Amino acid sequence: MEYVIREARRDDMPEVLKLIKELASYENAADQVEISVDDLEHEGFEEKNFKCFVADVDGKIEGMALVYFRFSTWKGRTVHLEDLIVREKMRGTGLGGALYKKIVQYGHDNNVKRVEWVVSEGNKNAQEFYENTGADIKKNWYTVHMDETGIKKNIE
Image 1: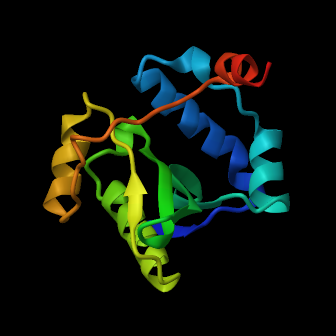
Image 2: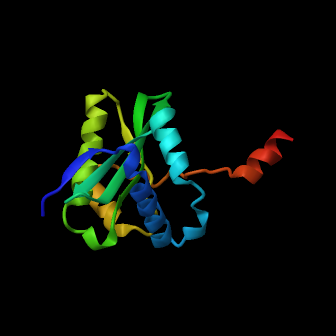
């Protein structure tokens, strides 16, 4: 199998959204995806709020990784990996590892002190993969989210 890991283009966003929805379905959260292709195009290519890389296999997008810069008061500028997704039928082919390596290289090229991400508790395969690459899973830290209802409640 021949593939290319490359920066996503605006016209890749419909396939990127399909991958996002595929991951949400895998996580039993398909109804929680609110973002649209227009949102991805605007935020990624006009506002430049993220960088997306895709795994292109014979002209078909089979995987993606979406990242953005954050700032750590302890480390300085970091790269946050929001999602790394490979179509289910393509898992085990090396595409995930190639996307992952691209993100690590992107962090290195941008002189960040840390690449960070969240992995779900139930995704043991991903956890094992990350630990085997030298990543440290912080089991004593909790991810905290506040949704729109909570935001509104706190500003009233």
